[in-house]
Length: 248
Image 1 (cartoon, rainbow, N blue to C red):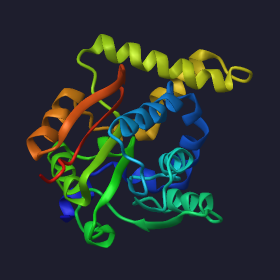
Image 2: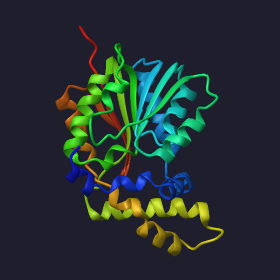
Image 3: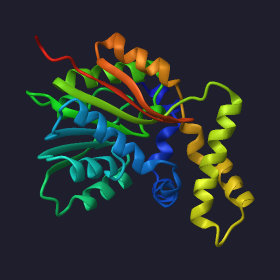
Image 4: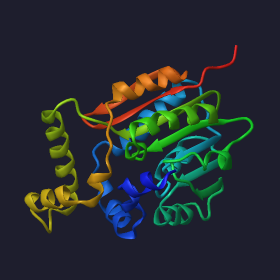
């Protein structure tokens, strides 16, 4: 990673405790949050994947790994993030877990983290949740190629992600839905107008580098993923991914 890229990037706000604390408070207002995990479960089960090993990229406090551990016979999970407050929350979440969980620092803007998580047999599942959209588009594509190489044949990549709206009208509809969801958490102490002002003023808004889900599915196919699909989409909230082909 060059010094220029490091200077230009805006996602470092996620390394601040205040940003992560605010997200932990507001994420319960994200529409369909539990449905995203249910969709992931259905996709994995349809492909006959009983997930035993998984890699969680941009893991935050480990919420996606926790969902998979609750749904599948996970034996080993590796969690990667570049935010120490998030990593500490993930370590605390799995402190007494029966699953072998390794939580470590890794900056997805570069590739230095890859060798530290590589497994000889590959992972059954690589999952990411609301993380990769912070990366420039070219880096998204190279990261997807790295993910492909980290999967075992037949393993799946599932991305629960914030994607770009096709028009301003769809973006407005999405933002209204999100504002209403967040407001429902605080309606006893603030007006919808106050919720909207806080939403518009949030620091992390500048960290979003959104790409259409159609483009990202195409990138996956070009890399070599099979069974690529967007299995859920509600405005800018999506679940998409694909599978590394089984060797013939």
